[in-house]
Amino acid sequence: MKLPRNFKGPSLSLVRQNPLPVLGRGGPRWGSPALFGLYRNGFLPENTHIIGYARTKMSHDDYIDRVTAYIKVNDEEKLEQFKKITTYHAGQYDQDESWQSLEKAISDSESERGLDSGKKNRVFYMALPPSVFIPVAQGLKKNVYGKEGVNRLVVEKPFGMDTESSNHLARELGALFSENEVYRIDHYLGKEMVKNIMNLRFANVFFGHIWDRKYIDNVQITFKEPFGTEGRGGYFDDFGIIRDVMQNHLLQVLTLIAMERPISTDAEAIRDEKVKVLKCIPPIELKNALLGQYVGADGKPGYLEDDTLKNKQSLTPTFAALVAFIQNERWEGVPFIMKAGKALNESKVEIRIQFRKVAGNLFAGSARNELVMRIQPKEAVYMKFNNKQPGLSYQTIQTDLDLSYHDRYTDLSIPDAYESLILDVLRNDHSNFVRDDELEAAWKIFTPLLHKIDGKDKQVDVKSYAYGSRGPQELEAFVKSYGYDRPNVKYDWPRQSMSHHANNKL
Image 1 (cartoon, rainbow, N blue to C red):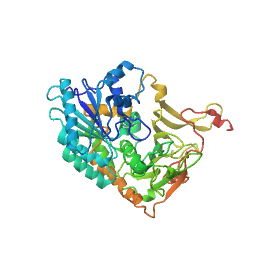
Image 2: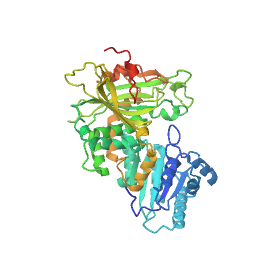
Image 3: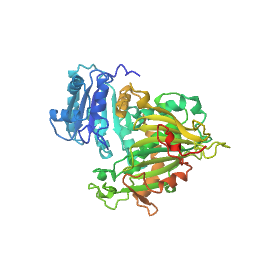
Image 4: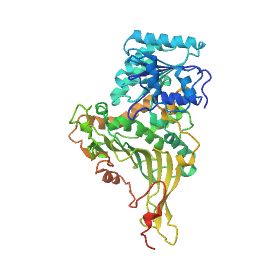
């Protein structure tokens, strides 16, 4: 998809709580690496200028040092060119004078670049806590909103804390910017394998015919991080694992798996179907939840030992397994199990679709078929199926049909999720962004449960689990109670090892 012809030379203003090109856990996630990736590959519109804006005062050289600290590239010539299209401007979030100063800086840049009237396009990227969303949006609209071109506002999560706060933010932003101008970014929608879900579902006839409750027994969406809060406990404690990754990232993945076929690939057609699915999901009940909090193990500190955590009796979950049900004809009775946690045994995000057992199976004890989509690390799609063990044996073993991207697509580079989504903003493609009614429907699913957890309801039981484990000991029994059949045989992904069957007799 090409950029609109009239969308040339935009001023991209990055309004940040912190001027570093770093967002959230784990270090750099978009910032200058994503923008530089677009620039280096020729996807930034011609004559673009990038302005960083925050309250921190710093020199231009200091800003450039921070911007380039996370760019890993051997192309020094391109990097030097990139440095010339970005500057920094310091200012407050609640003062008209600061925003007017930013307006002058942008206007001067537009004049220097020789932009014609009607082509002075502006993209405002707000990487900020929700507490300052409204004053910043008000300051931008009142003082910096372009009158001679297109305006686009990109908003980072979290989009509120519950239904009420989210609706309040939506009303306030809606009074300032039109829905078409607003892009609520969820970086998981920019990940390669998440964007591939629709292709897998709707471009393959064999998946289309088995994608319902008649053939699928359960669906698991798993998010695992091998590290804890480590200095971010003070921030994390206000949100917890459900708000941090489940209400947004994992639920977005669920909608793509479960939605009906849209009438086209148009952004609104896709988002219409996602909203329909969300409206079919009743609020998640406490009985369908398993909550956990990690404790120290093997020299690693527990959550309550985080120095930045003020409440040392906190019951904030760092792990959750939640089960949602979709009350429609396609999915009635199929559990969608979302699991997410910190300080677990590995780094992994995957979708695991387990099919029903073969009716009247001739080969007793054979495992169920599974379709697995690994989102990260090392993107892959593989189907687990049963096969005769090669040789003289007639034993049935489990193996896989495997598409591992790092083996198959060795000459292709997969872009960063933020790189992909920023390009979508420039293309005016809303497909991978969250619409206002979609956001409201999503919060309604989680808000009653979150209020029980926040209120420290006596019924809420938060289990302990060791740092570096798979989660609470109760997890295996929990997922089994919803139909998940964990194979008894050891399975090494992605290659089958015959050594596991060396002791099998004819």
